[in-house]
Length: 201
Image 1 (spheres, rainbow, N blue to C red):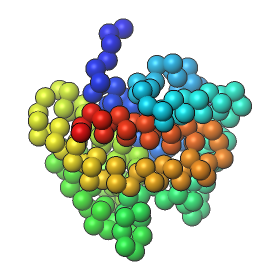
Image 2 (cartoon, rainbow, N blue to C red; image 1 turned 45 degrees about the vertical axis):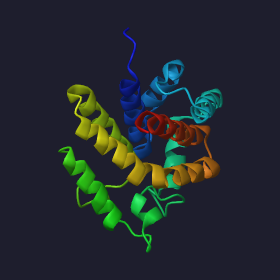
Image 3 (cartoon, one colour; image 1 turned 180 degrees about the vertical axis):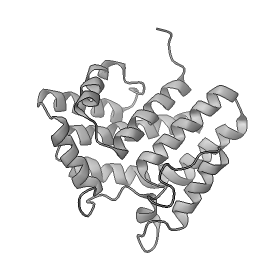
């Protein structure tokens, strides 16, 4: 298997994390994630090492998909009020509301690369999972085209959005998670942000 470039590794890591922040894994996905832990594409930070350890503990404790789903829902508010709201606008807006100017700023960033949130006008565009996925898709466009303007879009999005609010959100998830899986998701996401910062600074 050919070695991946740093940008390919970033794209793979952000895409995987984005999906897991948006939707808890099925048992099939959970099993697949655990089989690939030795090949995690962004292992080179302390946060990532802690995240991999957490996911190994999750497997050793036999945390199943139902347990992870319950914790995911409890944290992000799928079935009730969120313990840790996963939307940028809630964390950064003065009134703590979704669909404010931060949501619209994120929407405009997506549009610059021809991308649209999947549930436009029904769900906020600034969910952490969508923002991670946007970085992944932007990186794939950058890999395909080598366009410096796309690289600048990624750099600006990281510094104007994800790096401003996501570390605090992820710290709260790490502290409040009941499962090692969700704790590890937060830690690996912190590591991915650190890797992205290093690449785009």
